[in-house]
Image 1 (cartoon, rainbow, N blue to C red):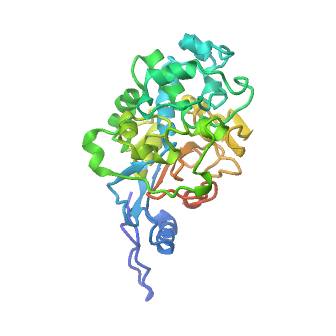
Image 2 (image 1 turned 180 degrees about the horizontal axis):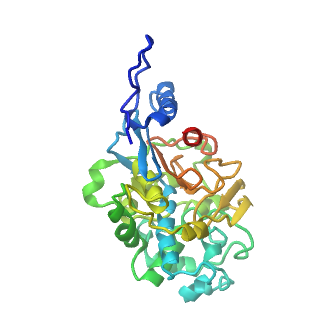
Length: 385
């Protein structure tokens, strides 16, 4: 596919405005680039990357603004859950993990305090009642069996399976321990060996030391009104207070190196887009590593409504976020995950795309912000071509 590096000259006397972003865009996605450039023009401090694969081919790969170039990588927070979820999908596809089996059937120590009937499907759609533990986890305990033992011993905050609430960090502990028990290796190694390396994906769960020079710290502004969280309240438990705030996590080398699957993933927008494309449509002539049936199992919506942890509407498949009126990032078939910085990665089988958006500076308005506007423009371009 022919990719333009900027607007092409025309015979019209009025030349197109120069682009502010660097990178490539297929002609049918020129309007998406123009929208991205408009964000750059409006805010001189704004910097981000945007990438899209369509039917296995890269059609957008852009970067712009200060401090985040096309070859840079940064923290993506809960976009990490999407990468981990795709690795867990391989365990389901291989027949090693049954979504309708109980967690305790794989992990006997987990079955205390009424958690014995909780299924894998429920646990991985935020229904376990374990958004955190009193006192939190030490950073060096992510991701280790020590964290898993502490979670297994915890008393759930609600009847497991009775409702749902976002498990911002602990869903990673659940995934990691299940992977260790059914596959005999860490989730980070499974992802590297079967996803990242074979498909050349620029997204890491466990950043190697040699990649550290590419890392750019996430920039964020602490809200003074939210500087203190009750460590025994829902928000405090969910954010691991008082050990660390969510926003600090990827800027700690111990988190990047360990590859904490709930929030420690590091990569580029191109890496996120290629990850979701490699799983579904395949890339560059190679088939997707997940069969359509597996995609259907993992992407099927499990819960939707008032999130017990956040008090806001949310919708989840198995691990993945689903589009809903408050987070309208894709079609009804789309699945993926956003991050606390407003990073976003997803696959949308309706349009055959893998999408990645990564800002350098944390953004407000995750539900209707730049990522959602760019996603809508991408889908509109797909529908028109």
